[in-house]
Structure formats: C-alpha cells, structure tokens
Figure 1 (cartoon, rainbow, N blue to C red):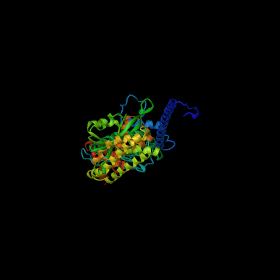
Figure 2: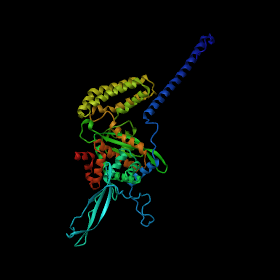
Figure 3: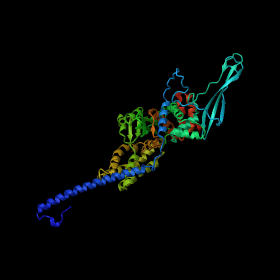
Figure 4: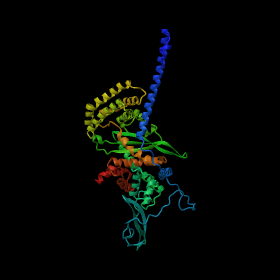
Length: 512
C-alpha cells in the first residue's frame, strides 16, 4: 500500500516512481482477486451441479458377484453349444450347466392333449393307446404361475402295428421349459422395470418356484437371439424416416481377467413423426459398442439418408461430411447450460436467455400436431425473428462478461449451436430439440443403477435388442409384456420374410 505522508520524498520524480510502483502492485492484486473470484464461481457452479444430481446420501448397495455372473451368463446363452465329450461319464450334468429341478406340485396344471386321431394314417386301421409323453411347460400369467401340460398319446394301429403320435409344437426355447408369457415377464422385469435377474429369482422363490439366476440368464440370452430379426426390422423402419433423433449414453463393461470395468456406450436412434401429424409409427432402435469412436455411429447409419437431431458430438462429423446426413442442433442442450448457470449463480443474463428460449418453445406448442407446411409457415413468421433476436442479444452480452466464466462458455456454445439449429425454421418435419432421443435413454439410465455394468459385449447386444423391442412397444402405446408374449409364441414358426407382421403397431391394430 501507499507509504505514510511523513515518509514521502520531496522529489517529484521519486514520487512519480513510487506511485507507478504502487499502481503495478495494485494491478497484480486486482488480477489475483479476479482469478480467485473466477475460481470461486467455477467451484460454486460445480457444487450446484453435484447437489442437483445427487439422489440421496447413500446409493443402494448391490450384490456385485450376482450382477457379474448374471451379465456373463446372458452373453454365454447366445453362444453356440460346445460338443459334449461322450467318453466322459463322470457326471450326468455338464460342468457349469444348471440342474433342472422338478416343477412344484402345488402349481395348477392345464392339460392340452394332442391326439393323432383314431385312425392310422398309413392303413386306416383303428389306433389303440400304448402310453403317452408329457412335456411340462412353466408359464406365467400376470399375477400367478401355471404349468401347461402338453400330453401326446402314443397310439398303435391294430392292423399294421404302426406307431402314431402328434409332433411337439414349436416353443420359444427348444427343449426348454419356459412358456412365452414367462419369458416376456422376465424380459420386461429386467429391461423395463429394471429388476436384475437375481432379484427376480428371489421373488419367484417367495412364490414357491425355484428358478436359479443362471437359468433366467440363459432364457434372456436365448430370447434376445430369437427376437433379433424383429429388432432388425425396427431398425430398418427407423432408418427409412426423413428425420431421426440420435443420442448415446455410457454404460460399464466388465473387462475380462482384470476384474474392472471400462466405459462402453449404448446408442439410441429414434423416429417419431407424430409432432407433424405423420401416420408412420414411432420406433427406437439401440446399438451397443465397446467405445465412443466416430466409426460406431458411421456404421450404425451407413444406410441412412436424411436429417439427424443430435448434440455437438464430434464423432458425428464424418456422417455430416458424407453429405447423406444433415445436422440439426438441439435447443434443449443450449437451454440446459443457462439453467445450470442461473441455478448456481442467479445470473440475470442467464435468466433472460431462458425466458427468450421459453418463447420459442411456446411457438412449438402451438404447431405441435400440425402439418409440415403449417409448422414451417408459423415458424418463419413467429420463431425466426425471436431466434435472430436471441442470437444478436447473446453476441452483445458476451463482451460484457469475463471470458473465462461459465456464463461466457454457455453463450459461446449457444452461438455455435444456433447456426446448426436454423434448419428447423425452414422444415416442418424437424424439431427444435433432441428430446425424443433423450427420453429414449431414461430406461438405460434407470437400469444401469441396478445392474451397474454389462458382463460382456454379448450381454450388451442382448440388452440393446431388448430395449429396442420394449421401448418401441411403449412408444406405440402397446403393453410390452402382452406383445412379447404373443410374439414369442409365434416367432419360432414365423417366416423371416414376413417378420414385419409381428411389429408392435401391427399387434396393436389386430388387438383393436
């Protein structure tokens, strides 16, 4: 600070030098204070974000070993069976394969008799009964278990002694016990209601049915493999749209041998044309990948041409450079950054930005469900002036604030992304944000809190298939369990060339 007046020199030059030195010190002090203020602001912003995203003092303690085995066994279920060594007679049950336990006697039995008839198909003689084969199938009807008994009498001809018996009908899992309703119940419990298989096993045990976790994992893997052609059909439907929504989210993938996890990704691609009164059914398909490299979405969308709503992820740039896919930015991402700043700092500029964005969303509420032509006309008349004004106003605010502040970062991000958002003004088939894809990720976000990680790439693929089917059914207002029950009962005998007949919106139409 400045010296006391009694110590000041009488020489003018010396006084000027002293004042210059003090001014230099003041400049240093001001720079240090400014840097501290910026650091405090940044820490406050981070702290506010952590407080908002924290859902309680403790996270639920889960059984890590059970979850690890569960995901590994789902992946193993879709692998081709290993040929058994017939020379090994040391054990009746292959190592690692769960033993089949008898179905509880207290469960009600429904008998279905498949008779070959009363006459021999070879000579027309009268058939007499020799015995019968009984195949028991454990089925689940919402709220209770039942056992379906498929009874197939073995008949012998009185004339030619030929043996006749009806063939066993096709079932979802060959030589397996679960009925289609039970398989659908397990899939929906795990991927829609986020119940890990070991918890389901405990629930079933309380109902008097002993189903091991490893058995359920085998059923999930085999069901996903059986339903994969249907998931592929949904993917083709999504990619035939004029505009799609894309997003990805991290999931943990178990690293073999290391006992640790690494970050993998689940990608979601959504087609939803209901906002512009299209009759095309909404649908979502998911893909799993071991990393987030740009080659992943490039491979997923190699057959797609059209618009894509997405965030600013640079991995999509190769798609945009190809000229086949045209980028549409997301206003929700822009708004979110201003909301974060306002909640942590109470910034007046951030509050004003939020209000201006709200006016744009008000116009979207007005045109929702209208034709593309009407939507484009109203946006040109009402939304374009507001968007132009928002862009100019943000440009004017930027020089007035610290360039290192969180608010400045939010403004720079907004100015960059608004340029990519402008196509929605001119095209009525586009949306102001990417919320359709964001909503499709809620099921994954909730699920990963319970199962924590994927056991392997195969388990990730099974999860992607299950999410594709269940979320598409929900988008179409179809009960996933009812639809999957019907589909699993039919798909084994259904021609692959007519797989589209099993899509959820076809099921809804036939049910109606």
